[in-house]
Length: 393
Image 1 (cartoon, rainbow, N blue to C red):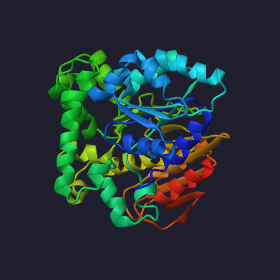
Image 2 (cartoon, rainbow, N blue to C red; image 1 turned 60 degrees about the vertical axis):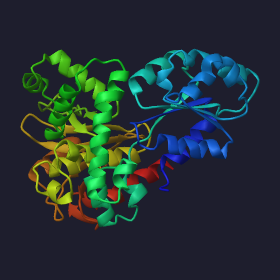
Image 3 (tube, rainbow, N blue to C red; image 1 turned 60 degrees about the horizontal axis):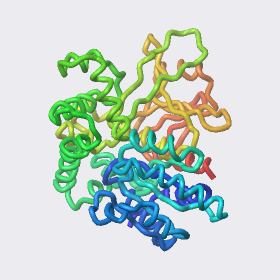
Image 4 (cartoon, rainbow, N blue to C red; image 1 turned 30 degrees about the horizontal axis):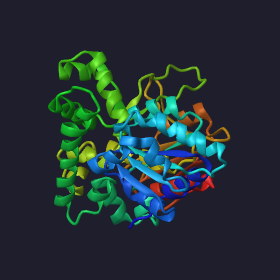
């Protein structure tokens, strides 16, 4: 059992709010984490993909009302959109009765539906948390290189990372992709051919970390720009793709306005590109941007809440991979390199002169931490993630 770092934050939210929504892709470990919370609170668990559990909610007010004093976990809650109005009434009754918080834990793998429904019915009564795949602080807190490389190569979905062999890991990821395309996405409503969406997903993997160019994607897929935008919105809403916005600084330079796009799990990037093990990944041109996306996801999960993330790029090509605007108006600038002997490029120094961040880091694939001059510090991804996580406390 690998302890999830989000568990402490989840238990804290359950003490503060009547309902908490735990969002994340399928198979990321939401149910396992929810069971741990429900067991500690003698709670009840309902899976709305299970017909027996769904039948219990035929009289939802009666059944859920009888669970007063217990934590009720409802998995795949977006499958019962009418349930949110019922939850609102029950929560308000319990608040008037003076009952403590922590009545409902709602699990959802499709944020677009869950956020829309709950924001209308449960405003002010619900908190949101996102559970991602495993990250280095959970599986390699000491920065162990073999575990870190395995996590990058296989990705962080538990069954992929914990598989006995690389072949088993690839088999699981391929099945995961096919299930999403053929079953899960159609159940959400969009009528998109599975093969078309797979091509789109694969094209995003090929362009990992690149500026979003809707026109190029539209031409390759023989669709219009609005359709490409709809596909991208869907993948972002499913928490499978990240759209990283550009940073708009008050500098006298022309800045890039397009977002950068990343497939969020590195293992899925590699499977979409048919890279089955670490050697395959290291020999492919995507290795650098795959590592960049892996680092970005790790750091954003570790960063304090309310942190805003972006990247910086001027029209002349001066760039910073990641800018974190931390609570308290702290600006951290982060450049990411895959190698073990990272060099400070002139463009990095220019970007730092433009932005004047509080701290500047050069994240690389090693473990040693040392200064690079001009206030820049070389650091491993695990060490920087630990430093960000410490700011939360």
